Image 1: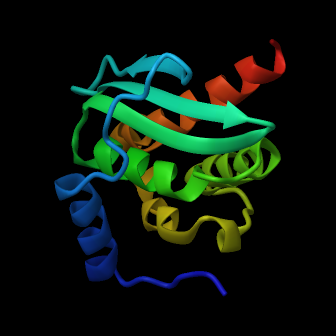
Image 2 (image 1 turned 180 degrees about the horizontal axis):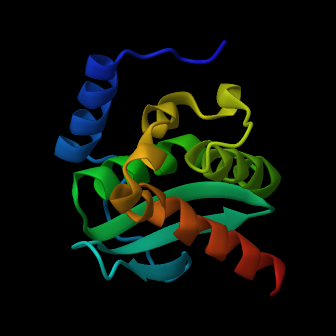
Length: 145
């Protein structure tokens, strides 16, 4: 059953992840790392993943971001930690489908569903996807060697 939120609950979840971001720390040299920034916002973050045997053993990030990028990246780290790379790819794909207003599997998104209305605010799409785009690039890079 997908989580159903009203606007107030959605705002509260976003503000909680912004005020108390999860997994905001720097991983060591064993983590795959990608730098992500935005020309239209203050976002400058490093997304990191420790991948062992096709499992995301740890996911973290550090840097500076607006409320939306901080909250979405925080939620992303919680959502993907301990998932297989295949599960993570499925979740990321469905998150992007949700953002693009395409049919998607809401069951796999958990709290990330709070960004379901992001497409109505075009200026916020890059903010809401920056962490997910970074992790997507890490996973694609891991497949390519």
